[in-house]
Length: 95
Image (cartoon, rainbow, N blue to C red):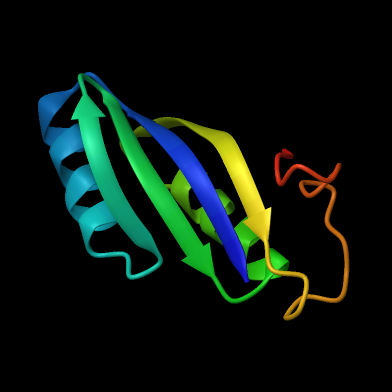
């Protein structure tokens, strides 16, 4: 299982930011936190490292999303048996 702490930066254009935010709210892999201006905090939960990487790629490809910062990655090693370039070190932090 992959758990990622994310900061998603939305565009300054209100209409595009609103559409992106609606899409984020509808994504079952995400739990949204506080929003500060264009920056939206989120937690992503996926069943595998590969799916976690797909989540980040999907977010980066979303119209209205300017940037995705990965601030934390936690991996449950009991369900995942391969490593990822994002999952380096032992503290659960990687990108």
